[in-house]
Amino acid sequence: MSGSSTSGVQERDMSVAVAFAGMRRAAEVAFRAGCPDCRSSFELGAHALRLAIGATSRTTFYSFTCPDCGAAVRKPAGERIVELLTGGGVRTLRLHSAG
Ligand SMILES: [Zn+2]
Image 1 (cartoon, rainbow, N blue to C red):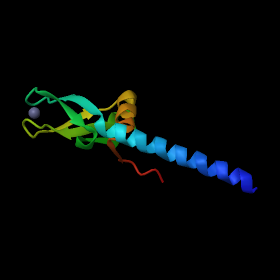
Image 2 (image 1 turned 180 degrees about the horizontal axis):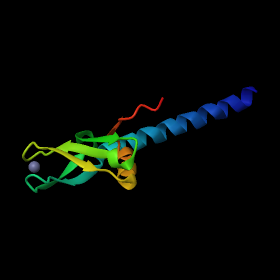
Image 3 (image 1 turned 180 degrees about the vertical axis):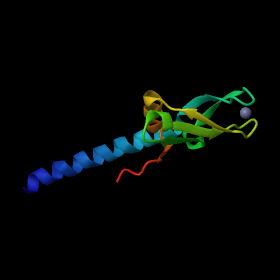
Image 4 (image 1 turned 120 degrees about the horizontal axis):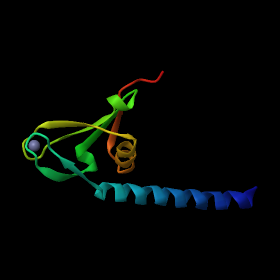
């Protein structure tokens, strides 16, 4: 009982370190985006993007503010984009309250 608990702590420490490494990496992720208003394209950090997940893929979209003209841009997000954004640390909002 006493011996196994030590290795359990080590394992836990390791997974925490991995989680932090992932977070640090996510902060450096930049997403390429374009503005339909002024047609400029730019790179946005994860903090500049918002992901809204609706009940269906039709109501799932990501949004950001154009750094050039200030327009609020909203684009549909497919399954792959959702995975990419959530994996990159983008703030996710669930529109439908499931229960
Ligand atoms: Zn723009």
